[in-house]
Each structure stands twice: as C-alpha cells, then as structure tokens.
Image 1: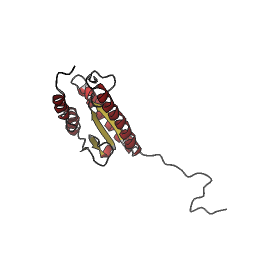
Image 2: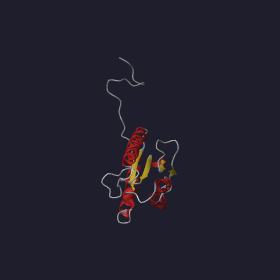
Image 3: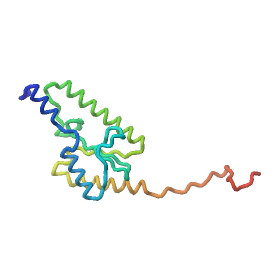
Image 4: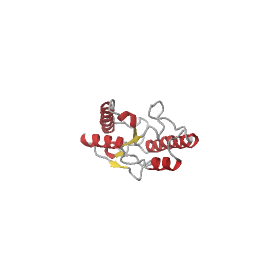
Length: 163
C-alpha cells in the first residue's frame, strides 16, 4: 500500500531528473580528471547517450537500476502500487535501450553501460578503474596498424602486361 496519495506520488516521480544525475556526475568527474574529453547527450546519436567520446568511438549510458530494470539488482524493486503500469514502462525502457545500442553498434560505436549500483561507494573505484581500462584498450585496438593485404594471384596489376 502506497503511503502517498496519487497526486503526491505523481509529483515525486515527475521530479526525478534524467540528465546530470548523481551517478552520471561521478562518471563525468572521474573521466575528466583522467583526461578523457566528451560531449553530453549528443542529439544526433540514437538514444542521446549520456557521454559521447568521439576520439574513442564510444558512448556511455549511465542507467538508474529502477528506471532501466537492472535484473538481479537489489535496487530494482518493482512497485506494488500500479504494478501493471510500471512493468510496461520499465519493459519499454529495456527494449528501447537494446534497440538504441544495436543502432549505435551498426554505426560503429562502442556502447558501455554503467549501472547506478556499480557506483555505490563499496564498488565505485573498481567500476571506474575498469571503465578507464576499457576506454584505453578500445583506443589502442582502434589505432592498431592494419595488416597489409596483397593482391590475389590471378588478378593482373595495372603495370603488368596481359598475356
């Protein structure tokens, strides 16, 4: 049973921000302090990712465990009041997240999702260190020299005379 009236609950839930949230600010400050530069909520990319690192062809989504239905997380507890509405809303969010990440991957972007529970004080440093490690390895992989490919034996080159 909800302790608030429907009007009070509506006011509380509608006041929750979608940009510049506390978990997002933690990730932003960490990355900036390590020399990573990014853009916020790029309007031309599907899903308007929270952080866009163009140099690394990487986007980062900082998801709240409740709003995006983080499976197996103790912070994702579906509400008992108006359960049908919330189940549909969270399921739509999950499906939308998957579709947006597929679109971004097809465009050549790496997608990283950081969950709110991964930024709790006990595991924050480990999560942020893993994020930094992942970004540095993505950069190295993209910059790796491509092997030289030789022409096939049966195809004549421009300078070779035809027999």
